[in-house]
Image (cartoon, rainbow, N blue to C red; front, side, top):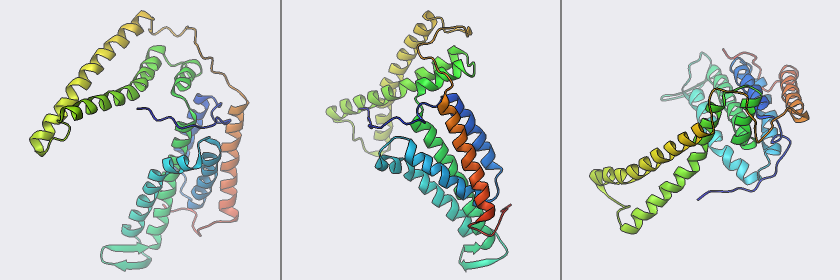
Length: 264
């Protein structure tokens, strides 16, 4: 069973996937080298606005997608805050030792992880896999045989889920879906694994033959069903990232939340 969530397309959906990918990779690397927690907090706010307003999904689904990463933020920050090392003790109780240094490091690591999550979710929710691989072939000159291979693998994921559900229902009808004990669980795993593996091998063979028949070789000169081009939306996305970054640095200097500029 496939889950279809109704959403609207925004300008982010029309941004060239290769441009989004390259910009986000640059941001990933840049965030690693930012050690001012005030800058990270401002960047989180800016990218959270982008995530909420322009991914095009209803708010309840957006928050549902974001919930696991919010948990990661809390767990990452709290583990560093509660059990980190430092010289200026704020609170100590048993193994819990909160210091000024551990607090700032926890906030720093937590917001860094949150930025990674926001950027990754924004890219995933606004980029169709088909457009991504077509863009990689046309803009970044990825070899078609690799692009179509990855695309075929992505297409197989929902099919494998449906097949798993079919096998589960068949075993349930036969009364063998609720085996107990270690031996029963191992037997149940075998009952799932054998049909799923055999179906995957057959499908992979058919796909390989079809790709060979369509001449998916190292030749890059091909025609494409989708023509991916650069547009004004790419400039808009670049400007948004640039403006958010500049504002984040300005506010971190002019109106800092924390009286610290480097947590290293």
